[in-house]
Image 1 (cartoon, rainbow, N blue to C red):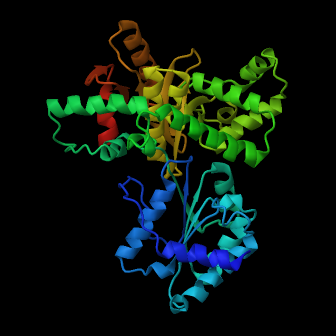
Image 2: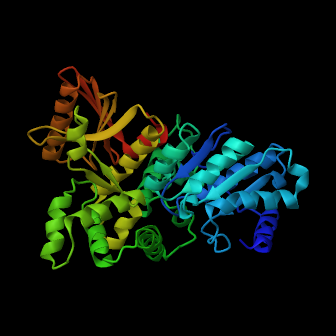
Image 3: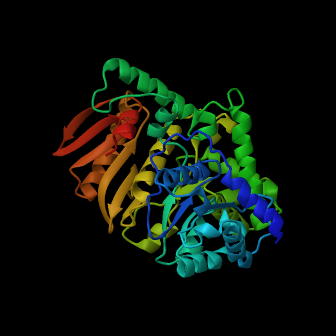
Length: 436
């Protein structure tokens, strides 16, 4: 470790001016535990750290009590886990006046440092340092937190912007309890824009105006090369890219890895089945794709079920010229339900499918008791579509003894009582901003 370079890095942070930060619905409240943020790249994790730093300063915490380390910065990329404590010592040598005050340590991407969790645990246990972490790997961060930091950490997922946040970034103001016809039309127009652009902050803020496709491609390449190819030393990049193509084209549908393994083989690609499963797992780890399992009372049956796949952001569909608004709408609902259930370990999100093939897009259960059921359909104007969606939802409600079911559409609204069961049709944009 070059101490002079580290000294300069720490001093540079003391004079850092933060960019304008727009509030998210995610926060990092004060807590005695290590706070961790996990999520895909460019979703705003670092800005949430910046916001927390500004909040601390607003409360009177001296900047000298704050250390920010980005382990993907070339200055720090040769640091070992044993040297992290040395960085703290250098900071104290620079600012001895804060040695008796609490330190606040913010770290971006610690998982690039082998055995990083040992250093974090020591700093937390031995020095009482307040620690905030971000990571772009769900498996690495969750596994290491669960082992070395068991009982010491609280984890929050950071996804691209929700529709509420999208409106905030667009500067749209509204009263959720007083939305007149004019405002409804305005919000629907913005919702259509959201279904097109997705929720990456850089794109929503217009910083890539006219170059959105290039930015989505850059994000995909960043995920591919930094999070997958480099991290896991992947050599068969053609198989990985083809697998991504297959996932994107299957958005919001069941995805059979076994079937697609044979598809890859039929294209002349040399690949083993274990490798395909491994690559799919890596894509989940990087938050590029999510796999939603079919509900079952048996955990084993559930774990072996065919997953439905959803993208970490619908903007990636634009790279493949996939306009499918139905898939986009369902993907948006999935991400929102994930936001609403992730922090509650008692709640589980699945899809439901009957033995005869009737399907309900999402069910939320608690201790294997299904409490809510959601169907998603772009429109119910077609009589056959309406009959199919309602019939599946009623069968699901009957199986789980639910009195109410919800169908989320682009703009249709109303309710229908059938055999003592209430079906609520709710415009998706309204459900997204109101919650529930």
